[in-house]
Image (cartoon, rainbow, N blue to C red; front, side):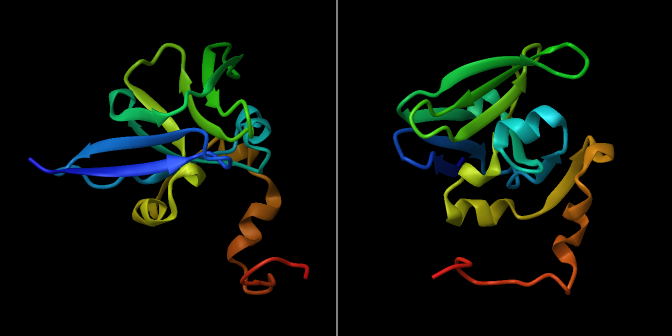
Length: 148
């Protein structure tokens, strides 16, 4: 049976990964986390993730560094990131060896487009208020950078 796959990398490209998915399985949907630790980990107002089986994720170049912190209920959260450029790759519960949350922004663009449907927002009560404005037609949209 043929397989679908997704690939991704960190900003410096020292770490590259592949996610193998059975052909019968559709591409993962995006889950957004608004918890405080994910905001700090990503340096953004939320963490956009795809949830995949841990066994489907393979680092094919380089190895991420592991950081452990505590979730709001006290459980261990394991986070992988590039020690050279700081790109966050994954988060997972220390108790859950089955699935991992892969940061969708690390997917190669052609694969990120396959995971374009938002499924769930967690810690919604902690969502930054301006996030709702992203779909507002009054927000200026620029294709490219803001400066010269």
